[in-house]
Image (cartoon, rainbow, N blue to C red; front, top):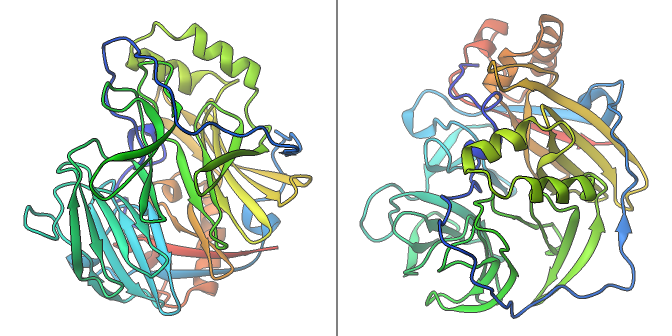
Length: 405
């Protein structure tokens, strides 16, 4: 696996699709949202557990694994990372909006089928590939973060419409009821809310979660599960919210953040500039600085960073059972790290937790773990190269599909 790009040692806020923009130097203008979270009758509370499992992730949490080598012999198929993946009966549609800014479709054996969209200024082209979502009828909708427009592609990859927004574009979005539900990364006079619903004319219809600081944050995360339920969470907050039409309800307390320590951290760092703030954020061993969620059929898979340590937790649907698997221990100061498993997980589909093996992460494995992974890949790949050397020198990403226990 060629090390296409580094994503292990560099903090996630510097490379993620949902990373924040620059600070606004003015003061906060008080904003009144049109939607506020309901007060629920009850809320699910996950069992707190910070102790890492003695097992590795694959042995401890999975019952089946498959690997798919994405075609590497044409420049059209090469990608640097996977931010989103959409799966149907015969294809993987892969989105890389961090590095190569491409949407590429492969068959289930990893063979290149087509590219969807391309960079440019003509109709149906994008200047800067932003977030991508899929509608219920199978169309792909992308945001062009540099020219402020939405482009709609049909299920076969043809551009069928586009809409000029003339506004700041969301960093994550879901299409619901002919409206765009978008998540935003930081306060600006023209963007006072973390969450907004807007129509295809670019007009804000509803707003929620006003910013209370001029700090630029990573945008909150929107998740639509296989049943069509929509969830929302944002960093430095321990609650997962459920969004149903235009109603927001606190659904889950994760018990991943220590909310009292987190609130104190926010207050103590209010006056820091952005650089020093992020330095504090990623080096404070008591603060969870990032949480990403994947909803599986009967489990949650949660990636989170706490200080210099990163974890993946597998949590039962009622939150009573929880296993933590340490992914990495990072040394930001010296740009070093120790990696325990190299996968980045992106989505859940077809009964599988889906991600990819990060080449940089693989290179940081110790020799014992590396040997174990090479054997596992050889034995469980749908299109395995000839030997270990071919795997190590492979020129594109390797998808991993894991069936959870």
